[in-house]
Structure formats: C-alpha cells, structure tokens
Length: 121
Length: 121
Length: 121
Image 1 (cartoon, rainbow over the protein chains, first blue to last red):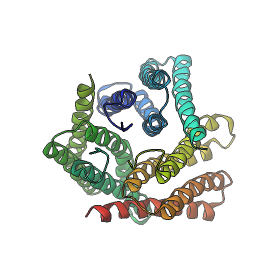
Image 2: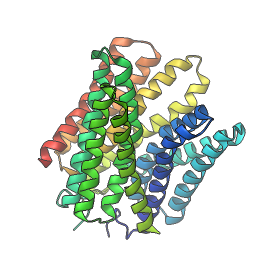
Image 3: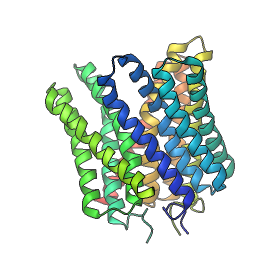
Image 4: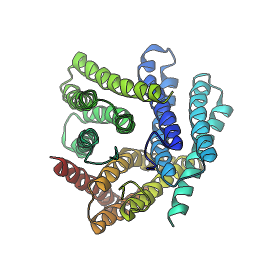
C-alpha cells in the first residue's frame, strides 16, 4: 500500500488537519477587515503564516517515515488545537496562554522535524 | 495507478500550476529592487506569500481526493490566473479588480479546503 | 517503485534537507527573543519565510520529474547550505556574501521550477 493515499488512515488524518489549519488561515484574511482590533487579527495571522506551512511539510514527511498511528494523530491534533487556541488567546489578549499555544505548536513541529532527520540518518 | 505521479494528468496539471505560481513568487523578490514603486511590489509580494503556500498544500491534497479532472483543472487555472492578474492590478493601482482577484484566489482555496474536509468526514 | 517513498534515495535526500531547513526555521522564532540584535534575527527569519516554502514545493515536484540523483542532491545541498550561510551572514552584517547566498537559493529554486515546467510542457 502506498503511504500517500486516503486509504492510509495516518495520511488521511494528516490531510484532514492540514486542510483544517489551511481553512483557518483562509478565514483570517477577510477577518482583518471586519474587526475593530485590526492590529490583533493581523498579528495572529502573521504568526499563523510563520508556523502553519512548516507543519504542512513536516507532517507530510512524518507520514512517510511510517510513524505509529497514535503518535502521528496526537501530533496533528495537538498542533491544530494549539493554533486555533493561539488565535483565540491572541484576540482576547491573554498573553501567557497565547505564548504556551505558540510553544506547543513549535514543539510539535520540532518533534516531527527531529524524527524525520533521525529516521534518515 | 498512484495518484502522485506525472502519469496522472490531474497531478501533472497541479504540478504545472504549482510550479508556475512558484516561479511568479521567485520573480517578485528581485523585482522589488528595480521598480520605483517599491512599496507596491512589496505589497503584492506579501499578498502572494499569504496565499500561494495555501494553494500548494490544498491543491496537493485535493488531487489525492481523486476529483473530476475538469473541476481540478479549473481550480488550478483560475487560481494561477487570479494571482497573476492580482499582481498586475496591484502594480497598476486598480483597486476593485485587485480585490476581486484576491477574493477569487481565496474562494478557490476555500472550495478545495472544504472539499478535502468533506471527503474525509 | 513509487517515487514518493523513503526507498527512493532522491526523495529521502529531499526529505532530509526539507526537514533540515524546517528545523532551521523553527529555531529562528525563539532566537528573536534572546539576541540583542532582534531586528537582524527578525530580518533573517522573514527572508527564510519568503524562500524556504518555495523550496519545499519545488523540491517535491522536482523529485517527481525523476531527475538524475546527482543534480537533485546538489540542488538540495546547495539550497540548504545557502540558507544557513545567509542567516550567519545576516547576523554578522556581512552584506555582499549575504546577498550572494540569497541569490544562490533563488537560483536553485528557479532551476527546479523551470525544470518542472519544461518537463510538463
């Protein structure tokens, strides 16, 4: 079975959460116009743009290292939840939780990135 | 047949338009130096950076949902045309058409994103 | 053999260098906080964000055009080296080498982008 197919449940999970955070990113753009807190929406959007593309590539390569389904699913879910919560906390100006969400997303990417490199060494 | 292969005409179309908008992005960087309207080139470049990576991932995942060739080809062509026209309108300071191009690209991404999520639910 | 598999040594090289520059990107974010030269770290980070995602997609599509292993490996290595050196030169404020690194990364992406489009015409 090819790893890059919707028949591979790990790839299907990746596809679902990758598309979910992409939809989140798409909705940030028009939001900027409607909110009075324009500066905050823009800041949250930029932070997404710095972190989500890294998740797209690392999640994809991580799937191809054939990881355990449980670990992979947890990575994808934690990242998506952290990024959505990050935006909510950014717009609510709750800084400590916002920083925690940012670091959580970063750590998921870091874990996947290191796993890929170690797998290939 | 594997979906991720140049033998799949839908993937080949995706690869062509994904590479085309990547080349567009590559040419924006040196442009900034040569134009007197530096601020405009930079604005157009940033808008590309916010929208084109989302197309790369959603177009790729969309191909793997095995869509109809006609729909997929239309999505890829409309997105590429909208982004190229967006830059021309941005540099010409024609705001209404520029906004229309931006929204068109966003709607293509939105359509592909929702299609992927619905396919996987 | 499927091209998108760690059994394909060209794809494995791509995966390694794509993950390597992703890890580089991940480390730029927390760096910003610790350095006194905040403005420089931020500038280097933004330049990465403008160039590395383009490498991720073009490198991936380039692998699927089934290039020679030597050419592909050289592209991936030169790009990764140019981006790492770019950051070192940026933080050291050595402008001519920094510009050379930037252009080198751009040329690798340009070469891969043109190769993909020509392959598909």
